[in-house]
Length: 357
Image (cartoon, rainbow, N blue to C red):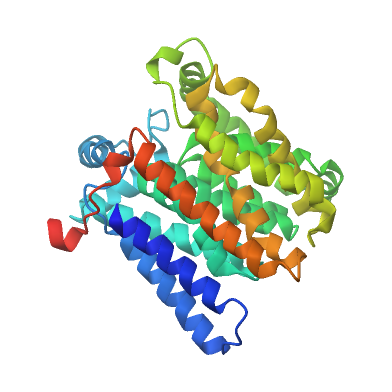
C-alpha cells in the first residue's frame, strides 16, 4: 500500500505548493499529459491487483472461447465481452483489456474536467474512491462510468443526441448505468423541444429502447432481484456502503446549501442537485440493499469531484487553508480504506505487469 500513499501524497504536495504560482501553460500541459500517461500505466498495467482481477481474468478466457456475437442475453455485459473476444482473437491478454479500459477512462475524465480550474485537485479527490476502488476494482463499471462522464459533458452543452448515444453504449458495459436515463426528465421542456424538432431521432430512440428492453429484460430482472429484490442473499452485504455514503453525503449537503454560489448552468445545477438528493435519501435503503446502493454510490461520487474541486474558487482569503483541508481529508479517506477495508488486501501488494508476469 506504500505506492498508493506515495502517489496521493506526491500529487497533494505538488498541487499545494504550486496552485497559486504562475506557471507557463506549456509546463502545465506537459505536466497534465505526463500525469494522465502515468495513471494509465499505473492502473492499466497492474498485475493481479484489484477487487475483481481473478474473476475478470477468468471471464476473459471464457469469452475468448464461448462468446456469441448475436446473443445479447448474457449475465455479464455485451460491450465488455465483445471487446474481450476481439482482443483474445488478436492473441492479446486480459492486461491489454485493462490498459484499454484505463486509457478510455482517463480520456473521458480529462474531457469532463476540461472546464475545471483545478484539474490536479480533481484527480487527487477522485483517486481513493473513483480511480483506486472503482477503476482498479470494478473495471466494467468504470468503463460505464466513463460513458456517463461523456454523457453528462454533452448534456451540459445541450447536445442531447450525443449524450444519449454515450449513455446507451455505456449500458452495454454495465447495465446499472441505465438508471441515469432519469436525468433526461430533469429538464422535460428542453428534451421535448429537441425531440419535436428532430422527429426521426424520436422514432429511432423509441425503436432502440424497445429492442434494448426486449433483449435485456431477463438480465435486468435477475440483477434487480439480486440487488434489490427477493434474491438478496446471492450478494454479500457491502460493509463499505455506509463509509461511501458518508463521504458522498458531505459534498451533497454542501452543494444543496451553496448551490447558487457555483457558476454553472441550469442543466448542470439540476443534475448535481438530483445527485445530492438521491445520495442523502439512499441512507434509508442501505440497511436493506447495501450492495445495490453501494454500486450506485460509485457513480454518484462524481459530486465529490465537482464540489471539492470547485469549492476553493468560491473563497479568496481562506483558499489555501481550504485546499489544505481537502487534501488532508482525502489522504485520511485513502488511509481509512487501505487500513480498515475488508477487501483492500486485494490491492496489495501493488505489482506491475512487466515486473511480475
